[in-house]
Length: 157
Image (cartoon, rainbow, N blue to C red; front, side):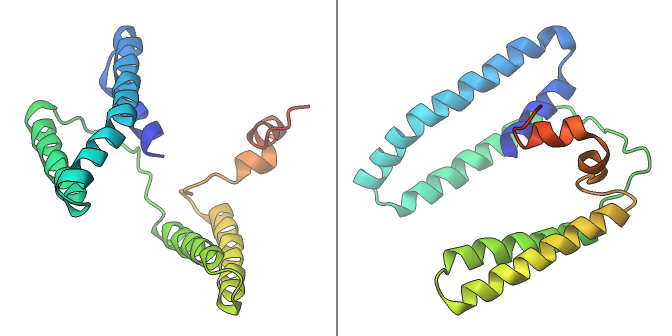
């Protein structure tokens, strides 16, 4: 989710003729980070201890936040009157937490209970999204558009 959001923000921030270049720079930065990150992490843990990874990450994040706030101009995107579905977010959060925590606790009875709760909240989430005025996930796309629904699940007949 982080990668797709970042790419969407880059597409909004740059004109169409510069998008290929900026997406290429973003992709290169991601792969440089994936290549150099384990090496730097290994150096930090070897010479300073594993706790310094968190300090290094926090300092690096602070530097990035300060740089971004000083250099990026704020652009306000209008929502055209759409609201944020807080109820749906809470239901989805509970469902995801119960399912993931339940799966991590297998094979105990607590795990089975949490998984059942998670599935129930996931069903409630789908029901709530069908009724919501501004849903987080538009379930009607899956119900009313067969091409979209089958494409999402890897079956395109």
